[in-house]
Length: 138
View 1 (cartoon, helix red, strand yellow):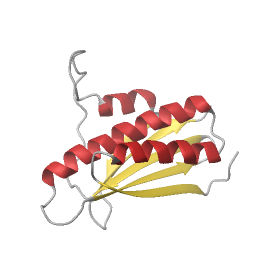
View 2: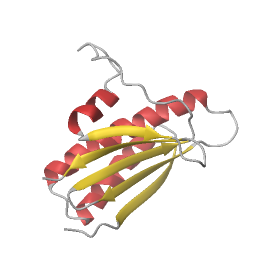
View 3: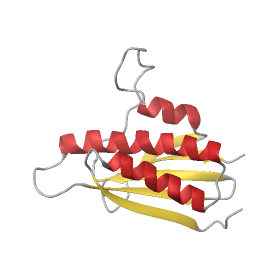
């Protein structure tokens, strides 16, 4: 088991290809940490949903000046993984009611809630917000 101090951070521009780069980074980091494949797949799904939400919602509210930045933070805590996505937005995430099967969006936080032990968000003193979830490694 890796020691408790295993942490990875990736900064991304809030644009469409951020999700692809975040997934790739997550797979590479978890592989280096020797996380079993089934947990890599679940974590990659969560990373994809959280980064997608950040890109979609932050870009809508971002000022027209300058690039909006996101951060993906992965923490290996021995028995669990913590996934965090930080963005400059100040609106709390809202999980939609169970979306209709034909809906093209609105499943992100529902999926995160379903596969994680817990999830939430906080507003750091430096501004923005961090949406996080905990995934068990059993």
